[in-house]
Length: 184
Image (cartoon, rainbow, N blue to C red; front, side, top):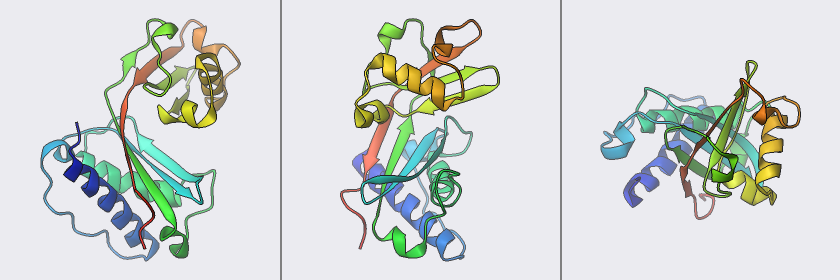
């Protein structure tokens, strides 16, 4: 579990790392972290501008401390998400950030075990992979079948690929930390 203080720190780390990268200055020197932030883990940083997705990149797992992972993926989300142009300095103030701290992956034994809004999914097959965070099917209004089929599409696979031999479907949970509003 990520404490309230750690949640505030994660959001500050993400925003500080993005601001530094946008202004071409060195990343802020991180304060010593303890607890969950000092342990290895996976995380995603999602950026929204005007309520719309503007970037989302993360690591499923990492040997780096969670604080470092969040700083790194925050910058990647802002500048390297291939679906969007790089975030501009003047957009950061209006952007809202969300940090998703991932649990370890667990194999899906039965698709009926997947709970919408609780589990995120990772599909791997034929050298392709796709991942959706737990909040995505809620935001999109998908049921379990739509969640799975959209995951196949995201991975560049045909419909129903998640059921085929050789396909690996894993689930995870995420602690999601939202900014109350964009910083000003």
